[in-house]
Length: 402
Image 1: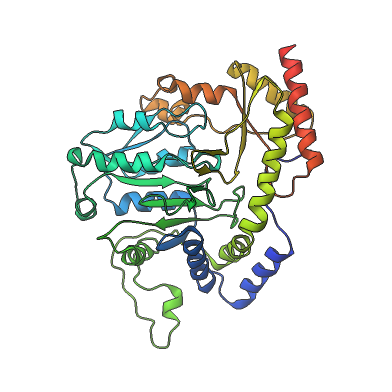
Image 2: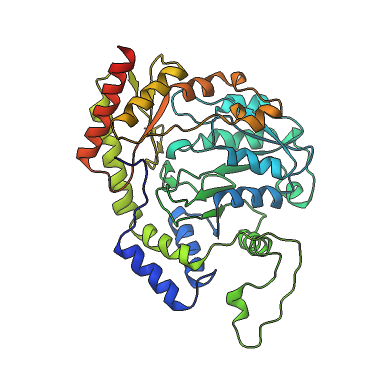
């Protein structure tokens, strides 16, 4: 069986994790702080906070911005449920909009149609590692200052809609040479087990807010909010006589551990000159092998200054129904090849249907979903296995079409 996306675990990672375990620091400590600095250096943003998940990072940024009941957050219908769930957690209303046909990303024109006085945040999602149109999206937030109704200190200080990027897929992607993490107000990465850069579980908030905001001060405040509202972490309390702490708010518990950061430190050092090169090689090989098959739409990885980080390889079967796509997937699995679907549009899920959403209202997103199959793409995938995957896909198409 060719698996879908196993993590890369080698001796370098194992040795660094063992070193972390033996160091005496297995919760948030020096490795986590070092990893945060490495991320900021890599992405080009002022400050980064590592957490236990991207989901936590998105929710903490919404809460920092004061998003609550009566507010609206614009996001694509084509994403994982976490993007929408955090909006619901805050008591706000997710406003889904449709996506581009060619790259699965949120459609800028649809964002503008959805903006009103209740809009507090635009949350683009970099699907599959391809950055969204941030220049246009950032411009929309500025253009619609006049309709923005601030509620709370941070909203008044920004004076416009916050652009909060769900960059869970796009660590290492870029627009005109600028990395994700430095493309808009704040970006949230995922380091889940299947991501390009993994810490087993984990995520990070890349802070990039404009003046007069002090990103370091926001980082310090979020450190407190994400550790029970405690004004000192364990590392600070180890200083002699520095045990005394205070709880200054009813905070949350979503810090990253040094054991997780140990994995991330190995991964980030070899990310550009190893990981991304291998992922690009695999994606390029898929594209070459599928180039002459008129039944298949291949993904876009480079366009108008935007460069993907090759997180997913999503193909679409031309003119296929959802049932035909599902039949193709079954035939592929019967050949001992694992594939996946990214994603069931959030408005099509039971919970969001119960809130009154309907996936049919987002025709491009729904059409993309019905025809999409994600092929395996991971560091240890060999050229021979790529060829096997492609042959399995073509045989499945032959059988279903025949």
